[in-house]
Image (cartoon, rainbow, N blue to C red; front, side, top):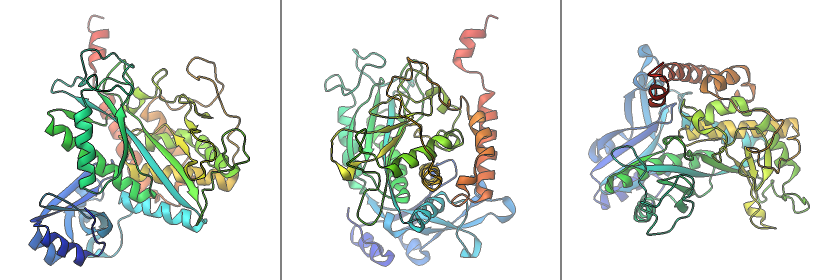
Length: 434
């Protein structure tokens, strides 16, 4: 539904659309979408919400009051509920909370603008549909790693995907393409490219909507990076480009290799230079590192290439001369990441490469899984990635306040220690009889 962008006009639209409730949404540092529900009458009188920021790790208990200020550009109506994503403000509405992930994405856009750029990011999100026994929803003929683009009747998720696209249209999110992916019960959806903030808004909305659609069909939609052993994991590949007022600055028609400009190469150089610390943000869970292993179309080495899905950074080359669609694809991220932090951090790394003119080295056009590659290895665990982030974070400081980095590292250290101490089913099978 097309919505106005003025809050008073939105309320008039809500009234005429028989809206009864207002849902104020926000995101914590983990990327978890949270909310509070108000009656339309209550919201009309307050035009904001309040919450305990200490309960979600965004503040301390002795300074825990926080304010939710709605962002009118995110308003959408679903049934009789008006949903609005919010900015998080400190008590007395004195200033924006530095730990608001949407604020960090906004700072990223402002940093790019100061340098004369506008960044665009188009996410491809992979996910799995699981039944009540946490097994992939799949047909009798499915085999691991053999389901890419299967069509009905072999695709048991076809009707779900149709309904999911309809539900996204209803809330004003443009899902461009969806299809069955390689894994059993696995699909992918591509979202129209937008600025870092708006693209991240779309990611959190898409994740919620797909989960809700899955419940209609009686199964669980999960964005867990590696829910099924022995099959492909789920990534969130992000397609990125830098523009000035008119031109895609990653495009160079005179480049014979991939029509990629020197600026685009420097951007890749920044990603490669900072990839170990960047991984702590874009692959932020213990489970993420069960995906980043050889042989499952997930990257393990910091190399770049054209049309090579075993590389960490791929330059798509579907069409020659397509200046508007020239981009780089960063394949390390997964959908467990906080998209606001992920997009901001990745642009910060790329921008550092542009500023310092970092050479990404020669492209790697071989299958890195089956060849010996002399290249930087991605971290093998969340702890290892956090070690890198602690020692390499200066490139993030213009966008990530130091208190945010410190808090992020602390909560992720605790997560890595807590979850890493739990025995898994595989460990029972391997070690029960030792």
